[in-house]
Image (cartoon, rainbow, N blue to C red; front, side, top):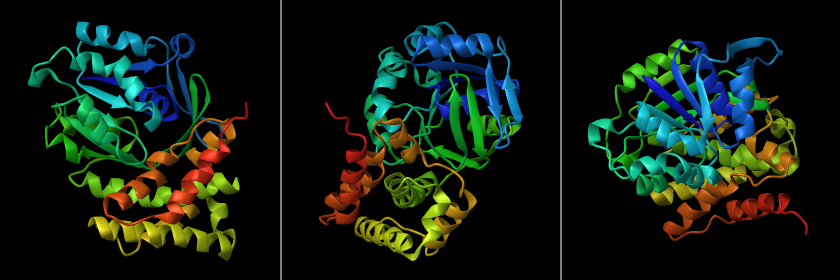
Length: 324
C-alpha cells in the first residue's frame, strides 16, 4: 500500500517520517524543490520534546518530490491513499497542482485513491467534494502536536490521537482497506482510530480551536497561560457561549462538558504555541477565517450573528497585515 503525503509542513513530516521509518511505502510531495532536495539528501528527523531522536526516515527509504511531479508519478505507480496535509488556505492550490490533475483523468471507481484531509477548521470537505466529485474523502482530526524546525526536521511537541472517517459530503464512498491504513498508522507509533462519527469530532475541535487559538495569538501567550487570570477565562467563556448558541441554532449537538474539555486541553498542552500564534509570529496569514470565521458563517446561515467571533476574526487578520 502506497501512501502519498501532500505537504512538507510539520504534520506532513511527522506522519510521513514516522510511516517511512516503520517501513511503510511513502512518497512525500513538497511545494519547493529546495525542501524536496533537503529531504532527499538527508532524510527526515523527528525529535521529542527533550530534543532526543524519536524516529528517523533515512534517505532512500522513501520517495520525495515536488507537487508538480505528483500526478505523473501516480499514473506510473498508483498509490492507494493520499494524506492532504496543507493548511486550509493552501488546499485549492495544492490540489490543483497535484490531485486535481488526476481528477481530470476520470479514473474508474476501483482505481480512485482514498484521501485523508488533516485541515483545521470547517468547510474544506465541501470544497474538496466539488473539486474531486466521487472520491473517497476522509476527514481527520488529530491532537498530535508538532512544529517544523528545519526543512527536514520536526519537533514532536506532544503525542495525541488521530481519528479519521468518511466526511459527510463524500456520501459514504469508502477508500481502499481503511482498516489496513489504521493498522499502518498504529504500527508507525500513532494512536489511530477509524471513526464512524468523524463529523462530531470536527465540530468539537472547531469549538476548542475557536477559543484557544485566537486568544493565544492575540495575547502572544502559550496555551496554558490562558488560565492565568479570571479575565482571560471570561473572554474564553464569552467565545464559547456564543459558539454554542450558533451550534444550537444550526442543530449541531455539543457535549455538556465542553468547557472542561477546553480547560483540559489548556492544561495538557500548557507549553505549546498554537498554530495560529506561530503563524502570527511568522508574519503569515492564519487560519482564522476557517476557525472563528466558520462560526461566523454558520451563524449567518442560521439568521443570527456571532459578534464576538466576527470581532476576533478581524483582530487576528489585522495582526498579519504588512505595511506597504
